[in-house]
Length: 119
Length: 108
Image 1 (cartoon, chains in turn purple, cyan):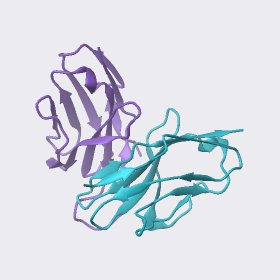
Image 2 (cartoon, rainbow over the protein chains, first blue to last red; image 1 turned 180 degrees about the vertical axis):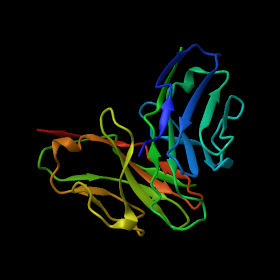
Image 3 (cartoon, each protein chain N blue to C red; image 1 turned 60 degrees about the horizontal axis):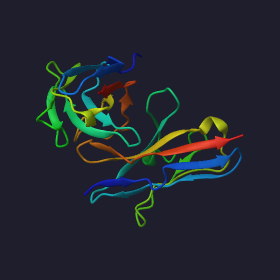
Image 4 (cartoon, rainbow over the protein chains, first blue to last red; image 1 turned 135 degrees about the vertical axis):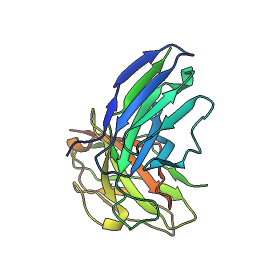
């Protein structure tokens, strides 16, 4: 079974530039998550999709970050314009679990992450 | 507010010594707790979940609702256990929140 795919693996940009990250979840997984992991910290949830709808984006800085999952499959996370403090690893994860649905393992499957450096 | 706290950033032990990685949580609902692990140059992956009451790679974790804790334990650490360990709480919307992580170093 193919895992969660993310690209690019590494990106270096200057502040005020824009960047986009792509994620392809495991086939059939309804729920997709984007996390931001700053060095020395735990992953912080930015946005959670169920199919092509947003479940939670309460911690997404909407003035500069946007994300979409138009067909309920792959997803793109964009930052425009980037700030120095956006330097982090951006993790994508997927889960077959549906919010409010039948109880299951609750396991999230993570991609390798996209490391962003903003200079 | 929902929160997961891991008080230790780094835990260093010698091979064969017991290990306990601490995790405390704050959540008003019924908690569902996990331990995730990230080995060097690998993806973040699930280690174990409290509902399973299983032992994975010799690790166990017991949910203590009275103390709101979910500490991870292993009686005899191995060098291959060296990794970052994250305690995580899943809420009723399937939002998974992580603690800040503890780096476990096991010396030979």
